Length: 359
Image 1: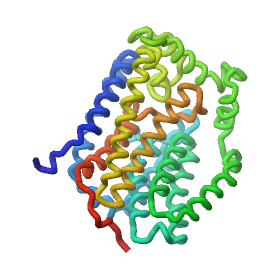
Image 2: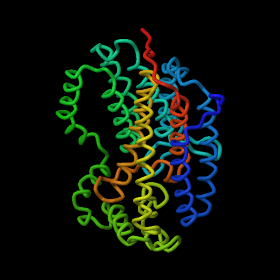
Image 3: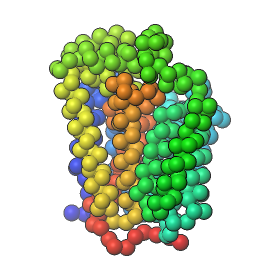
Image 4: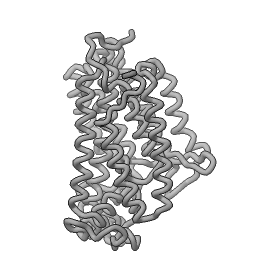
């Protein structure tokens, strides 16, 4: 079989299942949203096949141009974007809008992976400081939009790639210690509503009609679904709009309310198999760059899934982040499908002893 037409079905089948689940619940909430989501998915699938046919090593040599493209995407909303709900995250392209912090995630994964795949890069303190700067600039711009959720995801991606690289243990421990010591300073830079969300997370009933409203309605929706759910179109919280952002940030709560605990566990199981496949691919990756790339994509999907479902269940603070392939949104869907396209390109390639490195 020609390598160009290879499809890793262990990657794509979970994608189809999660997208089908998304379309099912979105049809219940709004058929128009479901139709748009289907268009996003078809577009993402075309990009998946296109990128699958581009050799992954091409991206290794283009990571510096990708840095400028990523920064451009983050600066465009500041220069030309409109304020929406207190944030400047979106770029208007005709009738469509792109969320800059979402669409650049695949680029950042390539940048982080390519930099640490260079020869002797992880054992050089100077280069590690540069690696920290490469992360800090886009992370700061995303944080200032403000977009705390995407900042956490980018941090997870950067950290996972660093951990799997050949960095000396001393540097890793030092960086971890610095992060722990400096973490209280983050509070100073949070927006007022972000601080309020963290405070209310500990006791949402302290402000049930304000900052705690989203979390309480999500918990109610999930609890009212029971084992088998109320049925499609019969969810009280989601259909009567008591549950805010029922098609994006809180779609897991909408799904659980209407389809029940069984459907929720099924979604978790599908994510488990998708993430397990990504880890398996990282272990059999043909070189260091592809290994780091696979780990970065794993970290992106894993962190988004944990944060989104965690905040739906009320066990994590609300940060405003989508559930990959399930939440409504073109930017998130395209970013995920593009990332999986990178993986599909080398998922069937055998391990080689030679590591892809440049001086």
